[in-house]
Image 1 (cartoon, protein in one colour):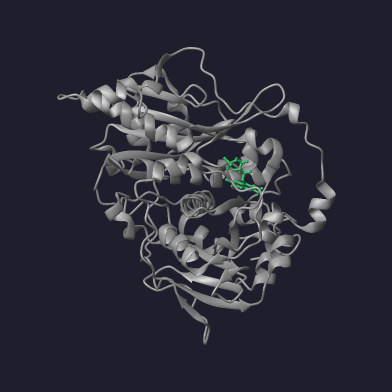
Image 2: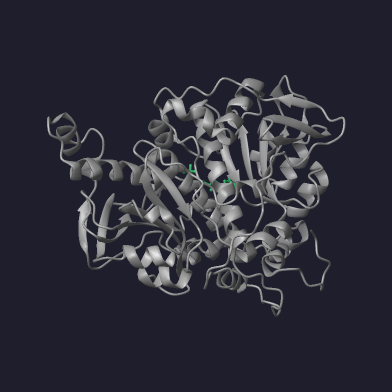
Length: 508
Ligand SMILES: Cc1cc2nc3c(=O)[nH]c(=O)nc-3n(C[C@H](O)[C@H](O)[C@H](O)COP(=O)(O)O)c2cc1C
């Protein structure tokens, strides 16, 4: 995986990954003071457009209540109610932190550093509740601003290579990112974080939509066409995924990821320009056939004579609390250091990786990811009652943990997470990884986007299961990349993309 200094990586995204790795020496060299007064504003403003207030359509509000209890409910109002709640649960404001001058608002989806680079748009073909056009979700006022009226649907459908999901649907969500909001702090490495963030957001969206829709994820589209159609400012903001709201119960497996070019003949890209360069070269400008690969039937790693721990369990019982769980989710700031139980770990993994077990509780049994089969999961057990400490591979098909290395890695995980106490005091730490050269060979440079998007999506399921169980949870996107593999015994070809820490919440 590692390229030696000066040698050329086999693709630019692999080069980008190498160049944006954190190392102890690199971080010490680049330590800089952030000017918080210069932080980009995390809300997009529209000066023109018709505003549709979505608050009256939230549960418990008069408009919603009246329609629900009416003998002849209005289909338009009913749809506005559904979308109002879905948008709120996807990215709405769920908490306020007092701050001198101006309070700071936290949202339904977590975001690295609380920078909220994502914007959410609703695209309507013309439905009962939404006249045709383009709408931006205004998070602060929980409203939609219809900034363009007319048919954008057919252009978008074409830009998505006539993806089948558009045929029977009338509404779609577009998720964009404003790069500078995150790059301001995280510089080139922000490219990883904006996709992780958006994956969390899409996790909320998939779960919140299940009561009425099946979300078709579309990550293969002509970028420039989609961005132009949404009138996004060039190079500042770009759509990274579309989520078409299909009918509930629609079978999944519509193709959502398409391959892009592989770029090998790049010149050295200076620091500060790597994010933009990778985004540019991972755009699609034409249809490319899907790689001919069968989804693997077997779990990737099966170490000889390793300890195997079955993770089968009764499904986590949600008792209709999903919405409430999303609303009260927060990233834990401190763990107590107490152990988790094996039953809790089983529930966390079951909800995240076995969605089919949750159909009976009204969840989507087959949520769409770009290419889940290219992601792997490693679980480092620091303190789980009844489970030996060490690093395990989670085999999703067999639903079992397979031990990689025995040891209590508490102090190592602390160090690997850049010295953050979250790493030291958690009970279990989940690492999502991928073999980048394989992913790029199959899906081109674009794989780098979608692997991070999928990792964030899985991260959000872990977050919500943890909150449901009364546990603490926090994502960690800053870690010493190479040392993670070295120390924990994660195979070298697996590039670590994202970490989710889990534990018992401690005092603040
Ligand atoms: C991709 C990602 C990376 C994160 N990395 C860290 C981290 O390294 N350390 C940390 O304390 N919190 C981390 N967080 C948590 C954010 O700081 C948190 O989401 C944000 O402050 C908003 O608060 P909330 O999650 O409680 O709504 C991360 C969250 C995400 C989504």
